[in-house]
Image 1 (cartoon, rainbow, N blue to C red):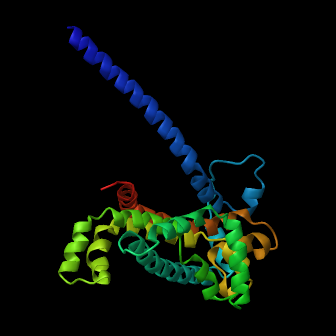
Image 2 (cartoon, rainbow, N blue to C red; image 1 turned 90 degrees about the vertical axis):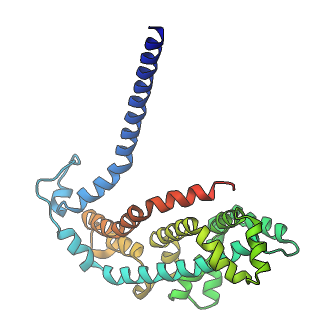
Image 3 (cartoon, helix red, strand yellow; image 1 turned 120 degrees about the horizontal axis):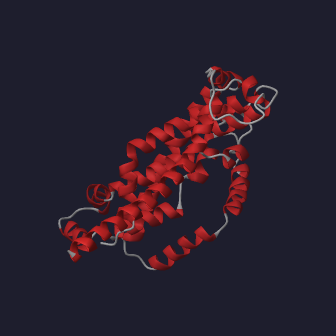
Length: 287
């Protein structure tokens, strides 16, 4: 009888804890998702309806898609999309090559001063981004690469954090596999391509997705290094709509542009969310 009471009390405590936890999680989810709801809601309100609201309304009875048409007609947003796709694909591809080779060198190759070099390399993470932006701007300007895709891409093709993350992942692979491959006459490059990359695929996918998101959302550097519309990215397009797209601040059209720009990233995350979680878990697990 006492055991039944104890078991019943434990179930009640567990249920109470679950109620509290799920209540807090629900509240947090609403807080996180509400800005997205507000963004979509504003994008389907007419300009007149939005500006006539003294108190912001959480719904609209007269939705319109005119703001989406305005977003593409006020500025060449379609061209900015193409530029952003080219910038994202090129930057991510080059970054992957640099990151994989650097991580492999630090994790597997033996050379004098490797640990010291890696420590100094990690110390670069301590440098404020503002200083890096200034240095990159001076360098790109001196090389006469302003208003070029090379000027946009080059400063973003390496990442200390991504190299560190992948290096730690590579280091978890047993040394015996490497020694056995060398005995069989396998070259370092073949070992990297045939063994290390397949094993660490979740982490590489995670790095790729994070870099794509980073490039897609890039604003400060493209804004700084380009003033020619032929090289503007979608982030420049949003600001252009705000500043001079209509001769006024058209918030609904801006929100429509943000929705259009956000959809590819949301879809990408939904498709690869399990890979991202697996990559983060693998990167943080010691073998």
